[in-house]
Image 1: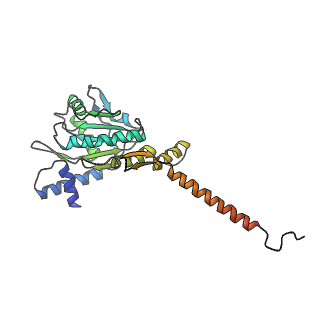
Image 2: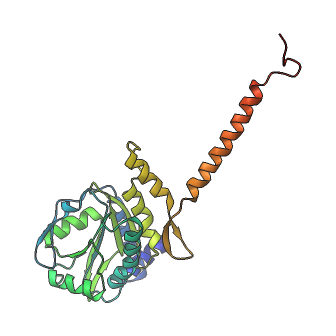
Image 3: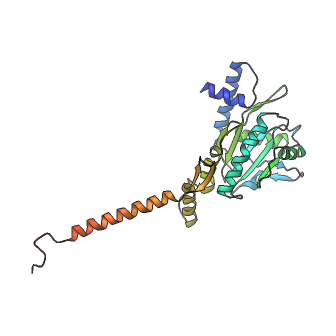
Length: 265
């Protein structure tokens, strides 16, 4: 476990003695996991046009949050480039408007709205509902604390976890994904839970439809894409049909008069 924690922190560029790496990684991961279930505070961020963006405007839909710094030369760009195909595939499978994504600069002295705009352009992020935002120190600290995101200044950059945070439609932290490189299902599977309401009660027709979509939207490793697969429910329907035929036969046999009693007065 310690080796895994060190690896996670190394992915984010930690440069220190091995013992320091391990201890720092363990503390960072513990802080990150302890934040699960925390509601996001009503922080206000700033978009590249200088317009204030209250984070509460994203309530009602799942939200992916990444914290990066624009002067990072390796891990943060890699994280964004890895997240891009996952978000692209999630939008294709779940709907463009089914969730939001925000990337927030945490080096408040350098990560201005303009720098965040340039970062999006440099990384080729042109997907709908993915916003690159800046923050002042007060709002950044509040957001980072709620997300369990710890970062430490060091010569030439920062030590931090490579982390993608999934927030539910009510604004509560649902799950963390670690690492700068990952396959799309790592992001999309928990996102499916939030979009289709895996843990919501089946109280309406829409809930039933969403539950069907949840189980039928599956990853095809051969194509690297998500498909809507009806075969699960076709199999269930065939099973129920066979069961009904068996029950019908058994009932008829049970109702049939015993041999020798047919036609007696």
